[in-house]
Length: 218
Image (cartoon, rainbow, N blue to C red; front, side, top):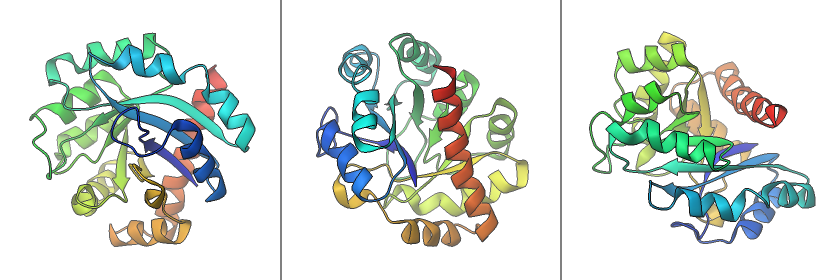
């Protein structure tokens, strides 16, 4: 299993990075991205604290660990600039907190994130067909999430992604140990969103291919 969207106590997660990685390893995960909530004010600070330790933590636990951020409630007009800042500071993965229906995310966030070419658009809510088409064109992965609340629109996201050829990944948005769901539960959540077994497996392959590409580019 792979989780490309997690949080540590550097934002609103419960665990220090080392414990998050260790618990994921014991739960059977092969790869994990640490993507704490970030905007322009803390991006550099966050990455300075994790970029130099991810490979060490990964090696110690037999996993691949990615240093990333989740740009959260960043005004759409500045998403591209903050995404570039994150990459310049060493982010291997840039996730954007999409327009989930359970938070007051600014309209236009989904589109701005896709236009900026971020890696993953998290819980994109009632994303439009045109935005999904653009995500497919630009290679931006759309997230199906196991997290309560944000997962309410998984079916909508999955339906449009499958229709227009956008790539899906399945993430936990983990904040606590119990959020690192099992393979069995992840599969059931994917089924609940309307994915077939093969489509579920493809989403898992998408995550693995993204990790391999990022680590291969280093």
